[in-house]
Image (tube, rainbow over all chains, first blue to last red):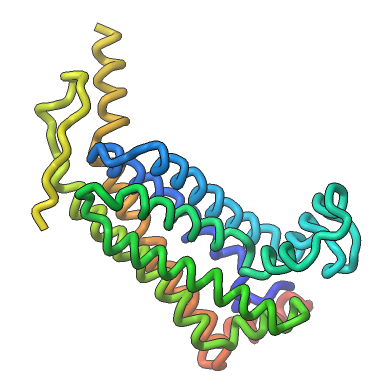
Length: 208
Length: 61
């Protein structure tokens, strides 16, 4: 039986799925404000892939390393072993970041931040907080993996490590902050009169 | 008539603030749930909550 207080508990899938919805809302808002460019779209796709990877990591749990394969997990199985017989340190680091999802998510969010840099979109602070929290989560995971060899020790250490838990909590708080900003911004977007005109609505001033 | 309805529906899907608001609400609930789960983990580790201690004997039987 898997311990219910393990951080890799399948229940974590629920908030992660809600974060996918949130990302969709952020995408809609950015597009509505005409602040979406090619880099923005690409960054959303990368962020979405990151979240899906994180969900897969939580869902597959202990079976996830098998899919990656490689010598650090008994040296058998996995997709990478087939195409990459000696994966090396990079893939160890890749797996070690609490699942690769957070690293990819952080990368996507950084690109998103760059894409809206020159626009007047209000979401700068919540998105910045989310970027910082994602990077910190990924880096802390990498750090723990570098200094801790076994997977069991790693899970135990993550569960007992207060700084890491604090950063994970900040990750949640950053999403709450983003959600509050999205809801507040959505209230300003009510432009019923524009429905049916066919043309995209004009961006609403942020008024911050 | 139908193309107009399709056009309106398309416009709503693309630009309606409802989806933005839905995303915002999902973000808030997700964040709260995330933090609550972390708190739950910590309370279990500190043995303030005993959920696992109750479940393990049940699962063993």
